[in-house]
Image (tube, rainbow, N blue to C red):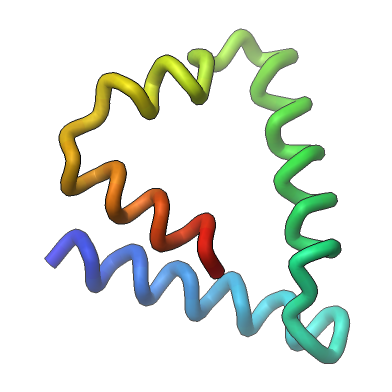
Length: 69
C-alpha cells in the first residue's frame, strides 16, 4: 500500500516536470532537489543521511526507488 503511494507520487512529479519542461530531466530534478535541501537546512530539518540510516529496510527501498527515477 505504501509502495503504491510513492509510485503515484513519483508519477505526479514526473508529470509536473514533463508539463513544465517538455520532458523529465534528471538535471532539472537535481536542481529542484538541491533547492529543497537548502530550504530544509534553513528550517532546521533533520539530517537526511541520519534519518535514512535509521529507517527500516522497506522504507529505505522505497526511497531508493524514488531516487532512481
